[in-house]
Image (cartoon, rainbow, N blue to C red; front, side, top):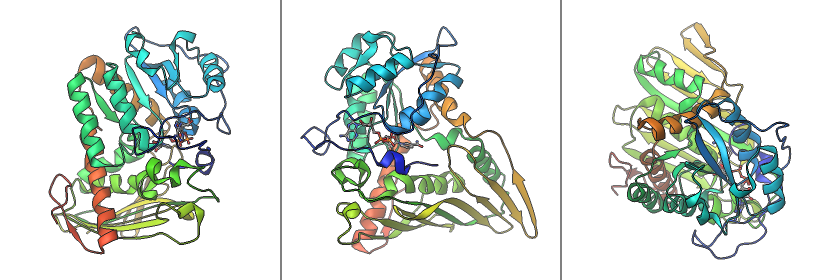
Length: 393
Ligand code: NAD
């Protein structure tokens, strides 16, 4: 299943004490459901392997990312950060992380003197990304930050400035840029496989079970943002940009926040948007936390259509190119390599100084576009955009 699984969404929020990030702070929670810890700890494979500290031991970190370090060539887990000491020790033992490299949110600053840690991987709720990215840079570490980069463009700008001040690398964990189907889709679009692009459609939704903002960060505005766009719809938005190769010049949108539903006391249930690109191509994006599951992206041009369904999953993606009555299925490889490739990509950037395919600037660009989408929905007006995604009107 793609981002935002129902299991992950069930993690409880114990409380909401005041902190730096929009009135919320990092805190510990029990082990999420379905976690299978390794029987034998994975080891670094190369002498120059980059040591990552994982911040936030939730569903995505424990069920998806951490088991995939095994397949990385130049990355290993060197430290863990959690607010739940019991979980920290269980996971630390299973992954062979030394006791001295296990941190709480309170003593995280001590990681600065831990030479086994090169990079910090922020896998916390989205509303905490900015604060913890800045803390990691203050400790002199490089940062891999989960998507969305943050909940406001002002936070993204602060994160980029913090990276520059610390002279460290910042990468956003946009795994689809390392996933074989999406990489092949980008190539096909570069080769005009559908002719001249006219329309893109992206739909990402699932139906969330009953859950109020005090118990689930995804429906809590300070931790999850304004709706499903930040967590799940961002995949369709990203695809519209990497398949078109353009930035939109205008945005129109609609959102809906039903009354009397605790899930949507603070956020929208659905967000739909229409983007127009300078070439004249248009994108239609819809995302929901209250609709039967879908994860689909189509790009349709003058001579054909590229259909992806599921489009951006952890595994099991499908892609077909339709050209009139002919259709060709693509099977470019195992989608699950995306996780390890992403870890190796930042490791290469750290060790070799190579470019980052998904830098902080890309995260900032997308957060600006999401701000424009919500502004268009709220004002019920079409918003004109500058080439960097900032709003013109
Ligand atoms: P989760 O709820 O399963 O885990 C969140 C973790 O943060 C838990 O360990 C929790 O204890 C910790 N935490 C610290 N302070 C917290 C607070 N105040 N409230 C709630 N939790 C707090 O969530 P998740 O699904 O693992 O998502 C974590 C991050 O990973 C998010 O940024 C999400 O967007 C991202 N994610 C990315 C993908 C992807 O495919 N790239 C998929 C899922 C999640």
